[in-house]
Length: 126
Image (cartoon, rainbow, N blue to C red; front, top):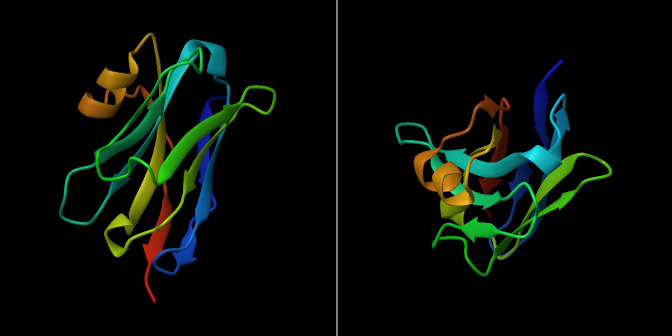
């Protein structure tokens, strides 16, 4: 059965760090582009970072470049989002998405994920 499950969300102080995890079941990382997205109530979902099926290509939203890092563990079939230097504007529900045969740019810019997780809440506040 196909599942994407996000974990690791919570409360972090401004300037702090948090690592989000996306566990994939029924999907092979070697065939799927994976992305992290976020959404604030009343706003559209936006792409945060995406990693290609080979792991060799990544993209980041301008707002998180230099602070967030996407990575993956093929053996564990997991994808991570390391969030450093967190800002209050990073507060959102974070989702992971997966898509086969989709470029990182289409995934992150057009949100062309075929499968979605249910999200994990991240709050950046003092």
